[in-house]
Image (cartoon, rainbow, N blue to C red; front, top):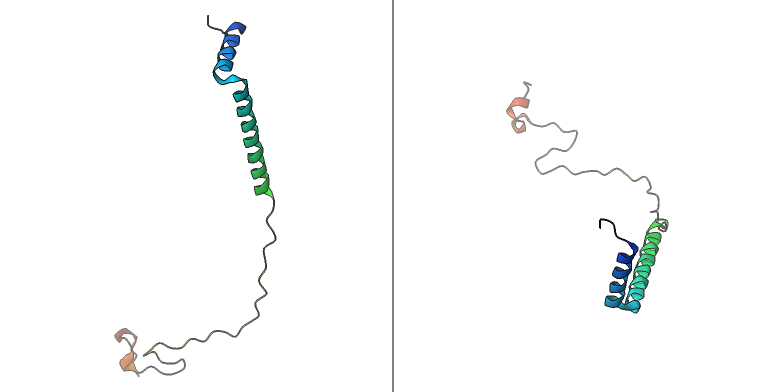
Length: 93
């Protein structure tokens, strides 16, 4: 009773054939096969290498960017008056 004999499988197959019919099972298997083929095709499309990326033209050496001093900030090379320096930065002149 623990194992199923061939007659059990024949009865189960007969019930399945009666419920679904022969045409429905073959249609179902055809749909499953189409799904598998579509999946494989999609996986193959993902593995194909993409077109070579378009490279930007080489950048030529440009002149360095010069920044402007902020308002209240002296231009480079000029002395800062002691009255504008923080107390800790003042030196005896």
